[in-house]
Image (cartoon, rainbow, N blue to C red; front, side, top):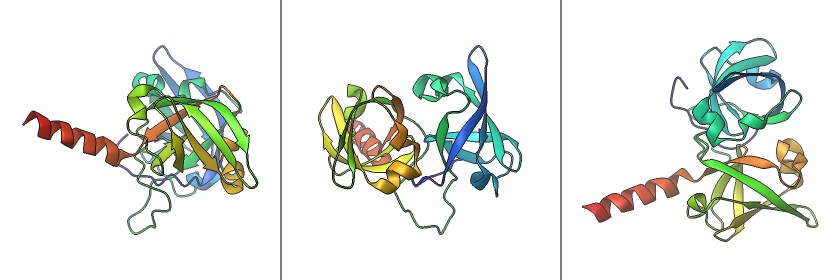
Length: 204
């Protein structure tokens, strides 16, 4: 990443992986996304399934980016392949409305979809999550799943649930998830800062 950026978790476009070139400890992605490419430039940041990446190649309707080992180890991007659809979001501009919540594009880890329960006009998704992340997740708090800003409706130390309305199911890649799929998770940055500050106060 060439600059500090911020996203809001409101997905602008569903892109498609055109190709992935794997190295020994890195990968190069080519992704189709005409909307996000329309005003992008080389060096711009882009959130791909919630992971902030830097555009290193650009055309009218596709962009390329390099993914380093640290990112591959922390996210689910290593599972991508040609033809897979991904959530895309450009960084928020100064003066824009924050439609979701503050999302940095710094993925904290991954979670696994373990159930989908249909409701009248929504579906409840349950994800298992590592204990190291569950302490940051609270009921009615915010969470980003594959870059999508969502509200937690239930949580335990082992799992959390979110309710997805039809617009989210069709307007993001979340609606196509199947049981066992792995997703990128970014917890609320405010919770992480509060923990860090509390720990510093205790050590003083």
